[in-house]
Length: 379
Image (cartoon, rainbow, N blue to C red; front, side, top):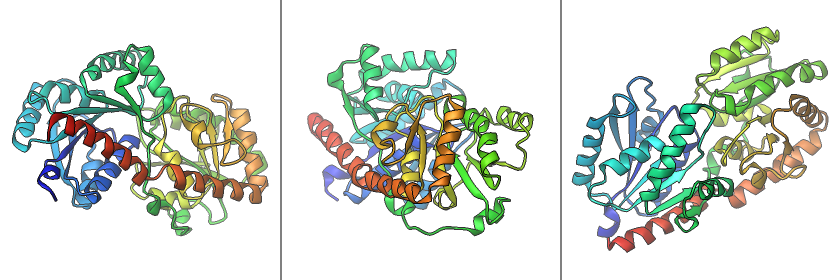
């Protein structure tokens, strides 16, 4: 490793579980190290709701990892901890992910280290989230560059007054090898409580309103009337879990829907799915969708965010409008009734992800951006 590359790229993220942004950080860190760059993954640990799954994953890959305790929404001690860490480690560049990490990066970066931000998606499903998005749109103007994971997110930032010259669009990417091995883990069906002959339809997402689980639930009865052997798998956790479980009981779907919670065995879980459903109301470029396509799973997804750039209706999957459980049910039933067409779309979906959304491709674009910003600083 050259002296220039020995100074680390410092990633900063506050996590609510191993979600899409966490996966991007991990893939970027892995690919950067493979390219000869030193990397440190810094994670803020919210002591009220601790999630250090990313830290554990980074540790398992022998990546440099630093946890910053965070005792509330605004912790002056965390700013001090991060400031001292930056002064000691002298990173070549800071890359933050999410409004909380952006705030701490800006507050602690007294040394004026080049700072880049990735906007994975501003969620505005509540008044507080709308305020955070507005605050974040102001803070990130002080960064050297802002990366959007979709054109829609880039356009959203421009509408809020951020200069388009400061914005770069870089698609998310995944480690294809993790998901495309073709091995089905049929024993997992029994472990999850499904019959071996069950047709499992699943989704992987945090259990929050914008992910649209309720619309898949409302579609379930129509699907079950045509295919009684279908079972539904919800992978992920979040604040909406209790409401969804109550809705499941109201619909009489106990025993038909399984809440798996947060899981580390996503490739195995994808291997048992007949169909992956993304019923979201709002998205950037969802990693879970890319992973399902890489695993050769047929796709039904709502036409939101950057999803249509990956899912071409009738070619690499099926697109539907959001908030339409009847349309969702019809799409699922059509796929279940035409296995050949489903497999053909799944194969074309895999090819789309392989050719356009690999972690190597994503990391190459980020590394070029890093180098440009670092050389501007003279490192």
